[in-house]
Image 1 (cartoon, helix red, strand yellow):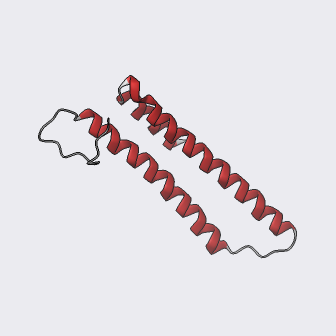
Image 2: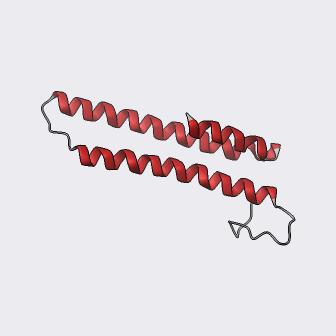
Length: 100
């Protein structure tokens, strides 16, 4: 998966004592994937029992899930940038509460 590869790349940029941040994002992505699989199984069961599946709703569900996963990785990227610029007086942190 592309997002997990990106998380691994970002993990290498974090200080060793903060690698758990990237592990959290990995766990969250796996959790979302498990949720998507449960949803897929539920929808498949509904279809087997004759329920009509709304394709537009399913597409919206998938698009929303993709956006959530992308936002998780984007947040990790901003956090890594803040770590990389720690001590730089000209850098404006993405998160005002800091990264410590």
